[in-house]
Image 1 (cartoon, one colour):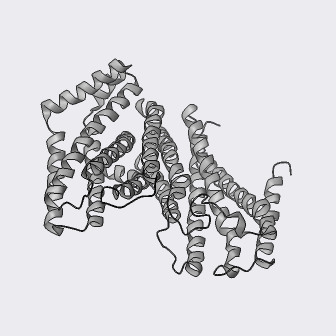
Image 2 (cartoon, chains in turn brown, green):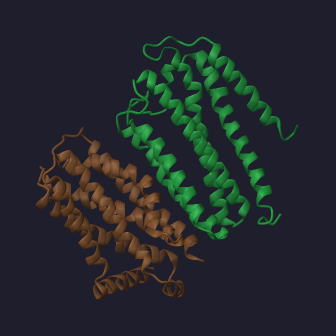
Image 3 (tube, rainbow over the protein chains, first blue to last red):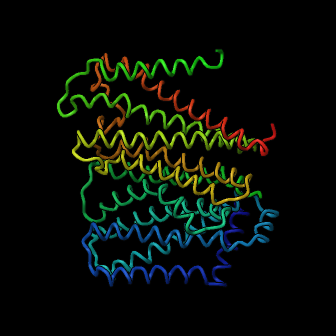
Length: 218
Length: 222
């Protein structure tokens, strides 16, 4: 089981290292969108900063994750179908996208801090929240990319399907990230929300493992 | 008669809700005043919507277990009736909020939840329409329906309990606050309004299902 997942994960990483297409493509997307933001509103207030940061994360995620199923051609999917189980395949994709998204989120955090000012009072706490957030975003959108891959128009459909589903998590994230911006929370409230986010991540993974086999066979 | 007893029950209950809800005494509360009667019409919409969407997911799961286009027709029909209930719930809520909170939409966490639910079901229908192959459409639609419903539940049942809300109950229980209704109101709300509107929703769905069955006769193997 683990061997299969790791092999598939390795294959994705190896392809990435060889082609270096997704990584630099998304990196360019991150950099240019943050640069445009910087040109538009140099140094915003902390609330605006927070809101913009998560919206940018959302769009980065749609772009980074959409590629993961698009790059698999029909023939290659057939090959995977022959050598691996659907659970292995989706787990590898979930892990790979989580990894890419974590990387992109941290890069965009650095760029945000450099270009749009630094309203963060508790930088490391905010970094932790960004990690939780990027994991949540990438898991949900991986599952949606798998669904959207079955219906040709990938990116636009992913946005239509994904935005309503991600709103609750995004609201929670914007709420807890105010901790990093210096807002005091009731005792336990912050931990509750973090646990809820982790629970949602777990739910998404379980749903993906249960539901992906039905998308898999064509 | 054997098959239609619940339809007669539905009509009787709804007549009782209409007459009793508009004519019977209600407690006089500050701000709420007579608008409290809206509880008989606004809140059952959410009970109805949850029931209908639950039925929709049940049939989606049945479709994945045993691919039969009839299950797919049932799932979409329940989802569309559920969406209708959601729209009616938002409208009745907006009218009520206009008189009690001062404006129809105030970004209350439960209003957002309702809007998310509607957007999700709208996306479900967009997704279905984007796939031309009938079997594939049914399968992908079922997967999205189950996934979206699982993601919707925390948004409707857990998050409102963690955030401040204008709705009664507020922190703790986001549902109807039992203290706001007296015995007379409860006599209409629980035994009549909630089951009455749920039955009406199921009735509407069964009519849609029968209509679709005739429409797609050549696709179903009956």
